[in-house]
Image (cartoon, rainbow, N blue to C red; front, side, top):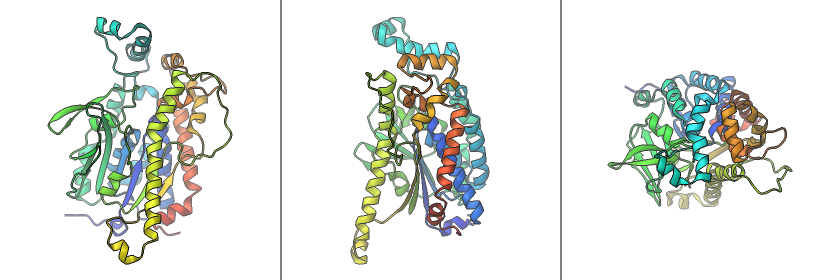
Length: 400
């Protein structure tokens, strides 16, 4: 028997949470501020996001929100507590031996060659060992609750994305209330079924930093990494699951000011190149997809009603909230808060972390799971969202 849910009377709202490693703390601040705005405006104390889609670290936050869909505000408070008290050791091994087993050995291959690694039968799979993250996720997220939450009407669907190193395809794994047929596009496919902790680990496996995960797909196992790679249409999953309006929460350069910045004139380090590549992987596709959606909305607005009825396209209200400050620059002063073995490894790649020197800070910002940094990002997410209070209220249709 379905439980009556006031939120079902409103248009189906989709929430999209992007990737970005530690930078996803900004997203926690945004959803916390939205919950506060809803409470202060007298909105019903129910989950406002019927469809949730997440990628990379955003997949972890998305799953946590989905599993607390019946206790929405309690779930938000728990998220804030976890991300406010983060330590890097909760996500990856930070002890000297652990870092030496992965990062130091991996970096040494650039000098000694992979032949030596083959001779030693010791091929490191990633820069860091994220085994602690699996333990944290199993304590924090109970995905077995999803079927009951959907049956009770608290949630319509959850989707997480990952990228197959084995096939080169981008895969969306989704668990939905309704029988939604899987969709397939060029090098993009979707798979319906239960979502597990392994799916979250695969989606959040930052390239090079964390190891790939093996997942079953169409009768065989494939190796998957971060879902932000080759993600050409981040908005697509929530649209396919029925979203009629979409809240997009970024964690990077979607709406940052074009202020004057210091420019390094020296040859870029490995860390600078890696940070630039990560920014492209995590952020560029989302910006393009938002622009595409807004362009479709503008085109549809020019058509008369009869012509609109003849097309399968429909206008979708979209609200985008992203950082008003550069998260790379905010990360630089906090690099010193990382454990010494991790700092030493990052320094070997070209991360500076000294005073105002921000070289390599972009790369470090994805791995900076330290409370001094995550708390600053949560506060920024809250302030950016509260500054747009009236937009949020209009988007959700809450009392002003």
